[in-house]
Length: 110
Image (cartoon, rainbow, N blue to C red; front, side):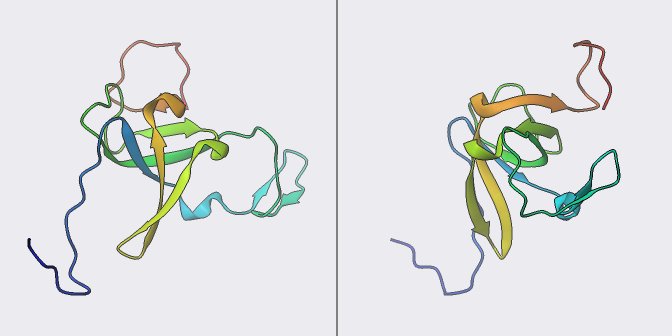
């Protein structure tokens, strides 16, 4: 058995269909179209969120690191890795992917 010194960083490998994402820090407060300030703590039911993919497991088929994904905040697990906050999702819980490498699709541009 190999021991690891306290504070030493180890590489992390995602397993199965798991996707590690990070929500941009700017996703806090936002404004409505009418200009009303909505605080980050406001509960908005069924509002989906965009995040950037940091790592994917070996069974993830359509998502790569660097992609932007759309998901429901209710389908997530929060985790801290090396002092950074991330979210852990399953590929099936992701609703959409925005990436320069994707050809075709619906014709929508975000």
